[in-house]
Every structure is written in C-alpha cells, then in structure tokens.
Amino acid sequence: MDKILIIGACGQLGTELTLKLRAMKGRDSVVATDLQNEPPKIVGDGPYEPLNILDSDRFHEILSTHDIKEVYHLAAILSAKGEDNPKFAWKLNMESLLTVLEAGRNKVKKIYWPSSIAVFGKDTPKENVPQKTIMNPDTVYGISKLAGERWCEYYFQKYGVDVRSLRYPGLIGYKAMPGGGTTDYAVHVFHKAIARESYECFIEEGTVLPMMYMEDAVRATIELMEAPIDQVKVRSSYNLAAMSFSPMSITTEIRKHYPDFKITFVPDYRQKIANSWPASIDDSEARADWGWRHEYGLPELVETMIGHLKDTIVVS
Ligand code: NAD
Ligand code: AKB
Image (tube, rainbow, N blue to C red; front, side, top):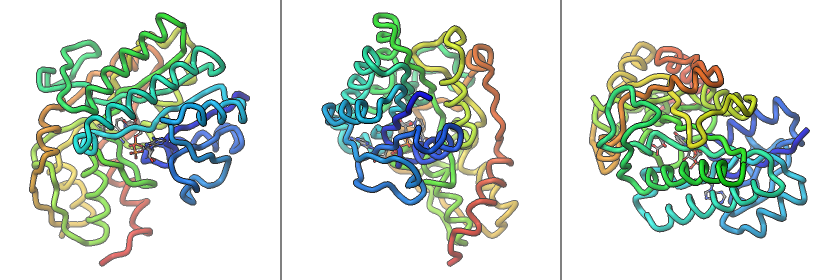
C-alpha cells in the first residue's frame, strides 16, 4: 500500500483525518507530522515526525525515509489568525504549497490540499454560489487559498501533478478544537452550552455561513482522493456543501437539549470577514463528478456533537 504523509496532522482537521486514514489503511501506512515534537495522545498511535513544512530539506528527508507516495497538506494559517500577521500567513500558506506541489513532480503520486469558502468575497453572490463565479477574497487567508487553487490547476495542467482539492465550509467536530478561523464559534458554542456556561459570540446572531460536520468533511476528502482520475474534473478546488446556519439558529437547536443556555452577541473584527463570505454554496459538480452526498444537517450535527461531548466536558 502507498504510504501517506499528513502535514498539520495535529490540527482540527488533521486529527480526525489521521485517525480515519489509519483506521482504513493501517496505522503504519500513515505518517503524521506537525510542528510539535510529540503528537497529542489522540493521534499518537502510529508513526509521527516533527516537521516545519517551511523546512523543505526536512520534508524531503521524511518523504525518503518513509517512501511516501501520497501527501495531505493541511498546515495553514486560517482566516482570523491570518489577519494578525498577513505576511507570515502568505509565506506559510504559499511557500508550503509550492514545496509540496514540486514534490508531486517527482516521487509523490497524489496530493491533497484544502481550499475554503474564504476564496469568495463580497462581490460573490450570497446564495448558492456556483463553482465558477466572481471571487475577490478580502482576507490574506482567502487570497492565499485562491492563489493556491490557481497553483494546483497550473501544476496539474503543466506537469500532470495529481493534486485534488475541496473548498470546505466551516468545519465542526468534537475531537479537536479549531485553530483561528472565523467559523470557530460554531465549535466553541457547544463547549459552553454543555459546561452550562453562557457564551459571548463574536459573530452577529443573524449571519448565515456554510458549515459541515467533520465526519462528512473527512469522508468527502477520502472519497475525492480515491475517485478514479477521470472523475476528478475540477483541478482548482471543488465547491462542497452540507448546511448553512446562523449563530441564532444553532443556539435554537442547542436549546432543545439545554433550554437554559444563554448567548450574547458581541461582534469583533471577525464579523467583517463573515460578512464577506457567502451564505450557501452550490456543490452540484462534486455531486455529479464523484458522487458527493452529505449526511449531516443541523439537527443531526447538534445531536451528535452533544452526544460525544457531554461525557467529556466538566459542568461548571
Ligand atoms: P488548524 O489550525 O487546526 O491546524 C493546522 C495545523 O497545521 C496545526 O496543527 C499547526 O500546528 C500546523 N502547522 C502550522 N504551521 C505549520 C508549519 N509551519 N509546519 C507544519 N505544520 C504547521 O487548521 P485546520 O482547521 O485543521 O485546517 C486544516 C486545513 O483545512 C487548512 O489548510 C485550512 O485552511 C483548511 N480548512 C479548514 C476549515 C475549518 O473549518 N477547519 C475550513 C476550510 C478549510
Ligand atoms: C475559517 O473560518 O477561517 C475556516 C474556513 C472557513 O476556512 N473555518
């Protein structure tokens, strides 16, 4: 079996993708890497190498040592954190992608690199955003994701690099905390409700954004990576969708389980980012090309998140 390398394996998505790929392909077939010297316990069961992906010599050393054939490159600075240090966000998000794409011209046979709804901006239609539309992102994160999509298509067209990509909505899971995005509120809100604490939400109550339960996102990723090559027709990045909701609509759903849950809305700089993103996405090309189907809507998401978190969070 071809060996897989995951870059950014200890993050919100990487944790769950590493666990799923190891369960499917065997723990020794999946080498997890991230900045830290030791992985957290949850991803600890299998090979792990510390890697700063800006160190391309170290990346190539790991590729050779483990004879890696597939790379999932997840390391990035996300939308909110990116605005603190735009130059560094650009450097990490772009340099690392080019390092990985170059490896795709040699030994690596297949690459996965995620894009985001952040590629869209305030000139993009708000509802049912089609695959091809006006983009004009407003954040350094969105600009880097859009440029990244262009690089992916370029490396596919020019060098035949088999790089595949999805434009994820906000991802919500219970195994790892989010790492500096605008949609992070949709994870934090569960932790507060279950701890019986009130939550001060940094996004306005009525702002609707596209979202997805992590299990759907991980399944979409693996399905795209395992699709026959002739079914992968979009070589920039596929639109991907499951549900859309606002802070108030997720609160209403959570209150079915925790009727006393209190939330206040104190928008900060992340509101402007949220305002620039669409409310809903048309993912019909992913559905037609490689059979994408989401499984979780808002009620299923809320029930599943609470079901998993309620025994692990201390009630205050
Ligand atoms: P995260 O911030 O939780 O995880 C990123 C990981 O990358 C972290 O563990 C971090 O330590 C690691 N990392 C940072 N700098 C690194 C470096 N120089 N070298 C190696 N590793 C480094 O992010 P995430 O939410 O897991 O996102 C993963 C990918 O999915 C990103 O590319 C992100 O843009 C994309 N994405 C995520 C979401 C979401 O809602 N989580 C939505 C759309 C797209
Ligand atoms: C963020 O909010 O930055 C991410 C994303 C949608 O890319 N969750």
